[in-house]
Length: 51
Image (cartoon, rainbow, N blue to C red):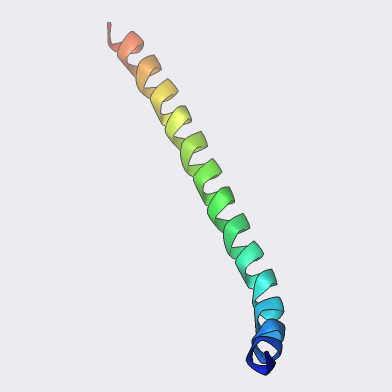
């Protein structure tokens, strides 16, 4: 039981880091998909311009 009480504060200290990491991953994924969508639109416009 004492081990659990010793570990609990460490877990609470790590929660903000876990949240920050998840936010960074979410933002990174969002930017990646946004850039990919823009690239795809630009590629379609380029194909139309070539014709």
